[in-house]
Length: 130
Image (tube, rainbow, N blue to C red):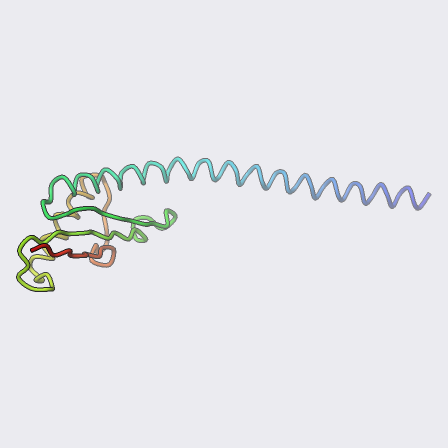
């Protein structure tokens, strides 16, 4: 009788563990689905802001970005590739850089993306052409 009881108890515990795993996986799947809709919306807004910036800022060639969507927009890292037609120096002047960053920031603001300090999120790469 003890052997049957022990088998029944083990089967019950195994069933319980599997049931808990199934419930946990189902919850994670629902969380991921909900999370992916939010990240999709954020990603679309970032892409719209990128397109707006590229279309409105003449020297801006392209923008690459990466983000940890759970810490958005603080984790958004933006790399701007710029074209400088007449290089006055190898470095961009601070005044030019500040103006350009402000213009890019305005494009993100139009899409509802606000940064605490965009200078921490943006990198400017200049390609000089003679």
